[in-house]
Length: 202
Image (cartoon, rainbow, N blue to C red):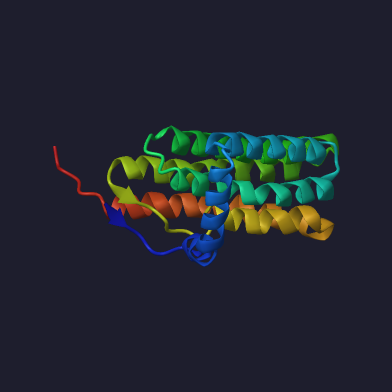
């Protein structure tokens, strides 16, 4: 498989891999299935999204912080149990997309309720960009190309989103950064695949 560059996400995983691995083994020994952790993580996002939609944006951000460890823990438990089926990865990726949708939809709802329709458009743009980043990687993987180019992978999006939720003056600048950055990253990935795909003339 053709690989692209090492990302910030890769570096963070390397730094935290030992601790997360030990936690995963502890949860595995406690008999906790990784799929339960994945679903619990989405439940936390649902709760946070409700708070955000109601205008309790900072509380929503705090709830999301508590849910962050679960995003890495389910994979660590799966590795500890030496899971071989592909369903866990599919479930994790699918619920990640639901999580993205819930968060940006709740922000869009909040902006609409405040009659801030321009910012609603930003939330929709950020949602489209986030989906495009993930979609291009998934489709490229089917062609044997590992696509990691672009700044706004999921961890980087979270790193922008959380301060934007927790610190009110950063909300709108954060939405601009996410709306532009995710879509630029999506297009970068399309270009990367184009440059690394062999075309046959008909």
